[in-house]
Length: 208
Image (cartoon, rainbow, N blue to C red; front, side, top):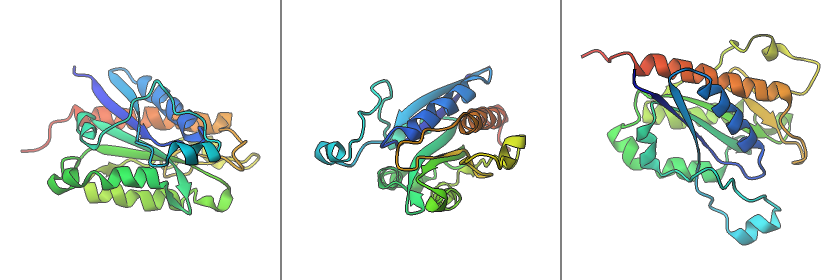
């Protein structure tokens, strides 16, 4: 049986989304026959601005992706921080560069999920997901939400927890907060869940 390829494509400024992305990758790779790969989208800020923002260095073990490389994947999981309820401009710039793929609808039918990081409760834990779905819809991709399949972790009320039925998420707060164990568990679960669905779809022939 052919290997099912899942690409986890992310942008991370202060490292929170990267931590989540690595857990999503671990979950996807836990599915037999699936090969999950991490990719970063290009940075649009200058080094001077990044230094002033005290942003850490980008992961040197994760390559930058070009839009055309999305075609190689059977399934995609996109991760990004929120900016005023929408994906960060760096990720939007990457999607804007997929115009040729959109024109040919080359990504149509590919399953895709999303995960994110926001600052606080009002930072867009649901809105960021809702606004991101438009990108998937215009490409004809099949959005794969988690629903409430994560189980009891979806109903946690005794601790602050990011994420929702739309996908996994975390809170960064002022930048010092890191993803919690429960948030990482949901990220792992999302990777596994999306990979399983991708594997099912990629091994099923399309009707003539």
